[in-house]
Length: 148
Length: 99
Image (cartoon, rainbow over the protein chains, first blue to last red):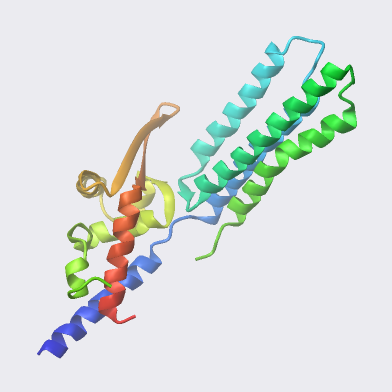
């Protein structure tokens, strides 16, 4: 009788485990949305730093950049119905690396200003690419996702 | 491995089939819309609300309410403790299943 009880328990446990395995809702569509949004944030930031005007006041330019960020965030929130597993962690890692790159860019610019040197366009473009890169990579990782 | 049969390590909150399905669904994502979970588990809004409330009180599920435009939206996610409880429950099931 004990054997029968344990057999039933094992069968029920296996059924539950099979049920758990089938419940996966992180859709490829939602992965793509979060991946694209993450990469776009990086691109916007990289482009903004690369083309940031020096002679004009930054207010209108900054406003445009902020509006772009809000637009991407709003699209991401409206379009995605789930946040696939590890999306947030991957995005935060990308953001963290991007922040480091931004700080490096600011230090570079201030060093050049102190020395009286100009921030040339190749430097601007290179810096913009370096700033954008972490979040583009994070976006690709999110978009591809992990198949479990 | 803890002493005693694995059935004693099953989480009573997760033994109810509907709650089990809800948590299994949320375990596969960082968060999901209420409607997505409802459709996946195939229960009504009110039934899902009731079960989510129980899981929220048990500290397993987190509920976030907001708006997209003028439309209210509710997002569900597992808490850190909830994920831990889920993993422990699955471990007990695997032990019972003999895996």
